[in-house]
Length: 280
Image (cartoon, rainbow, N blue to C red; front, side, top):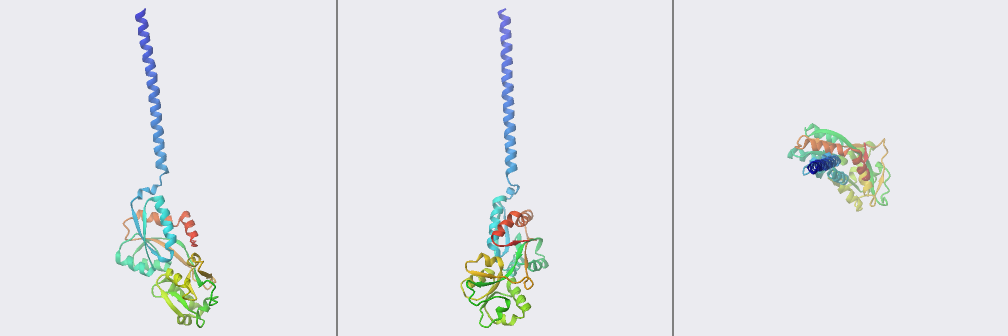
């Protein structure tokens, strides 16, 4: 009788051990499943572009939009991990640099005409429209020369500062605008200084070293504490488009395409808006 009792006790103990072992295994399995789910969620929450961590892009960029593009690139790096390095100059100089160096991943030029020049030289691949470039009249605060329209650039004694028409899109554009108004020769006679970038024009005009200039609207608005903006009527104006393009020389085609697409995303448009650039 005692022997049978011992056998039953042994069987019961084995059953109890088996039950607890099964429960522990179930808990461990549940924990593994939970950890796997968490890992999957973490991977899902991580931006896909983090695979670009440690990579970098070289972008040739029109000097007049340096600040908004720096802001866009910072957000891009935050999201995707890649660093974006810029070289700034006027579009003519940028195209020359691209042609000579045969290096770089993207370019952001001042107008579609500049893009066409780069395309004719077989420097660019894909292209998207980034924002509008709207010419406007810039005058120092107080408008001492009482400039009201393009025709006033030809008034006697007016000191005109412009982008260099030999190398800058704005300089070339100014001559066309003056020609439309019939004041090209008079305006040329009033030029006191020309510069190779719009940023230099803005700086010198802000210091009162001239009475007026033709500058991109966003540059004037961004310097509004020193400059005043006089809009050019649409029927007299020549509004341009800023293109962003990938380059034939890029060794990072996928990343370059990613950055180009990001610059025209809704998120990037909100950044550009803060710098008074009108998106397409």
